[in-house]
Length: 177
Ligand SMILES: [Zn+2]
Image 1 (cartoon, rainbow, N blue to C red):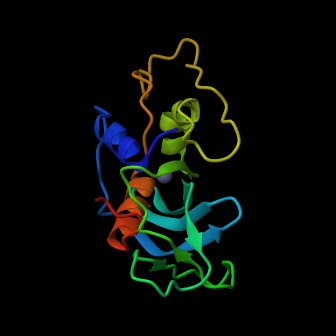
Image 2 (cartoon, rainbow, N blue to C red; image 1 turned 135 degrees about the horizontal axis):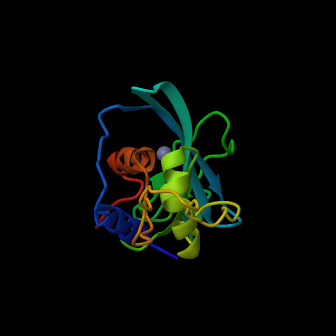
C-alpha cells in the first residue's frame, strides 16, 4: 500500500520524469462513492493534444478507507465535505466525515495510456497501488538496445494521473494538512 503523498513523492523521484501538464485538458472528473466498501473512485477522461494527435485516456484514482456520512451532520465537531458527484454516480448525496488527508489516505491508480502501462503498472502493482487486475510483468525485449523505462522499479504516476491529482487537490479531495 502507498499513500497519495508517497506516490507523489515517488513520482518526483523518478529521474527521467518530464512533467508536462500544459497539454492535458480535463473536461470534468466524476466521483463515485462506494459507501459499503469505504471507497471513493475518481475518474477522468484526459485529452492530450500533442504530436500524436488528439487522444483520450481513462484515468482513475481510488481512495481507500474513506469514512462517509449519509446525512449532513448537525454538530460542529467535524467538517463534513459534501461530495458533488456526477450524473452517473450514486444518486443519493453523501458526505465525507472529514476531508481526506493526502498524507495518510491509501490510493490505487490506473491510466489507459501506454506510458503508465509500460513505465509504472507493474511496479505499482508490486507496491499495492495499482488499480484493477494484475498487469503483465515487465519483461525487457530480448536483443533490444532500448534502455529499460524504469530501471529503478519506482512506482509512480503518468502525466494524466498527475493532472487528475492536481485537479482533485484544487477541489480539496484530498487536502494536504
Ligand atoms: Zn496516463
